[in-house]
Image (cartoon, rainbow over all chains, first blue to last red; front, side, top):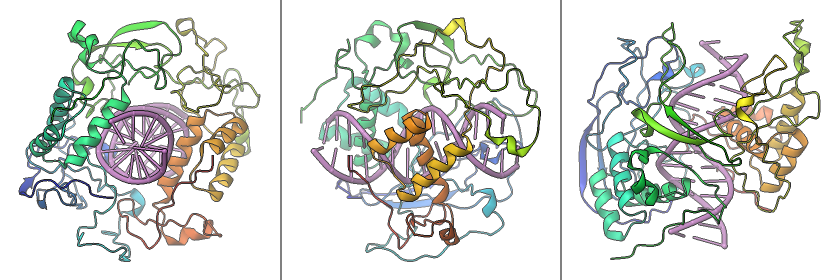
Length: 214
Length: 214
DNA sequence: TTCTAATGTAATTGG
DNA sequence: CCAATTACATTAGT
């Protein structure tokens, strides 16, 4: 846990999900629609940024879905728009279905807070496309962040600075390849991820080094 | 999918995202690449071979599908021989530091293909009963693995360490979902991290934490 | 369909 | 910061 960022104090209030593109879903696998956040019902999320989680995932179970089309082309995913992007699943396992809102014992737990929505756990956030794009772009410019950049990005993305930081870390880690010359030489290959072995040291690509300007 | 390793040296350059599979008649939604952002648009991808298809679990077993019986007891076919259960080159860099017996470099000769003996068991491994049992047993002792355990188990089971790791992950995930009564399964309360629902994390029990002994 | 092996990625931990 | 892992969500194969 350890919230280590103390960032901004602004409050963010947003309406999440309104991108109601149709559900495609079709029959099979209701797990189909997920990321799109589509079928989440519009929900309000209010959060103190810099505090706990902005991405609050209001889990609402989904009951009947509309299931309109099957069109595969409906692959577009959501875009963000405002803060929330949640991934929550709500898709409870089949076996639990039936019991609405299996709200199993609360057992209060720890000390803290008012975490109210219970989304205390690790709950995974899914970045929206736009968010990823921005991060990606930013990454291309610098694979490391200075505090200011971090703050700014966080603000723009409506993420906690910590999340931005983590994203960068993971990004650096996952590909040992940076947007370096390889990309310059082959711009079209920007999406090409040529990984290197993690522990390789003789790579022709070097690990980028710090960028401290602020 | 991302290319992540380069055990062998051959390079493959291909057009990605042109799903070669035929149109699915059914609705199935090949939603394969979706939120992945990365390859949403047709793009070129360059990959090192050795990836792409994962392990071929050389299921020799019955040549051509003899599969004579439906007898449930026939459950233990598979992987009879000690033959290394795979030939995969992908081995995502198990970083096992000191292990020198990294048997990577299988360098499958890609194109040439191996599936000649019929029954080219392609993907998805199925663990044998014995394997599952061992894993299960091991899990009872700790729900997480330290590198050594992983390595050992992998050796004993003739699986890649990564597979062992994955098994544990999945196992943990599955069970975090189990309600209390599942304690019966874990008589000694070894793994009593009863998380209830998947998305709920508070519990009087804490998540088991690292087991680092090695 | 369910179950499970596997993958991708956000987040945590320890150094 | 980095490496390694874990949790988690989701995909795909039978």
